[in-house]
Amino acid sequence: MSTPLKGPILSSLVLALLGWEATSEAAVQCQRTLVANVVALDQPLMFNRLGAQNANGMMFALREDVVDDKQVPLSKGGAAVPGKVTLRPDKRPRPIVLRVAAGDCLTVNLTNLLDYKANPNKHGIEAEEPEGEAEGPEVENEGGEGFVADEQVAERMVGFQVNGMQAVNSIADISAYTGRNGNFFVSPGSTRSYTLYAEREGAFAATSKAATFGGEGTAGNVSNGLFGQVWGTTSKSLWDCRFIKLRD
Image 1 (cartoon, helix red, strand yellow):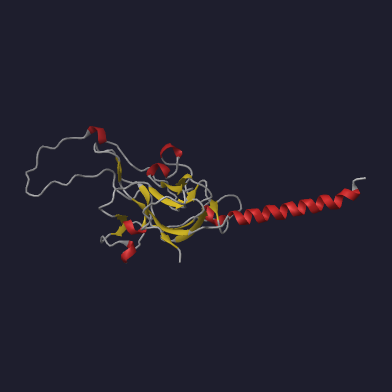
Image 2 (tube, one colour; image 1 turned 180 degrees about the horizontal axis):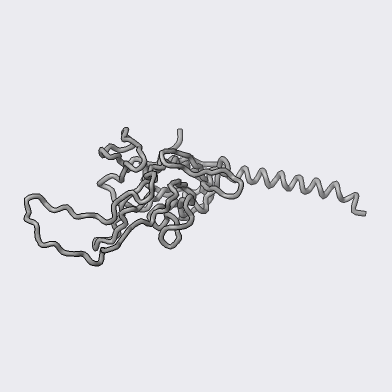
């Protein structure tokens, strides 16, 4: 009795699968493709004017805002050497924010310029005494005794995973290393591109999943400052895109 229905049922399933596949492919149609050149680097972080700090902080920054040890911007020929770069002195260390419109694709060219070893900076920031002034009596800072800022995770690979945005080319755009999939993280001195699709408006958290354990609060390197956001805005919104370029 069920034999005559077998053919129509199979045909319906095949058509449904084909329709689902076509819908899935049609869903990722980039209205525009914007490109952001991003660098992961070690950067001391000052949290307030009372002196709370993390000498071994980390951050994502636009390549235009990063300089080498001779203060030459990387975008103008500066040496992109792991552990030998810092944020421009006229910039404050803040979480990176990239903006796209709903329907856009975003290509993030991520360069890992973290030092090869974790916690490369000295603990604390020593104040420099002005020249010519007499030295006053030494004051012991008992509260700072034994303080060590070494919360960086030993793993030095990084990624740029954005929750809520879709991979465009392949699973490699997800920036992960899970199961039997490949390792899509970036080692120090290397660069990798991730292309993501903003299906809708919203604020999407960007983190590195290369270190998912350890550090303060077992939060990996997120607690050290290695995080940011991608804002998905309406197609009619206006915003400054001088450093996020449209792909030719």
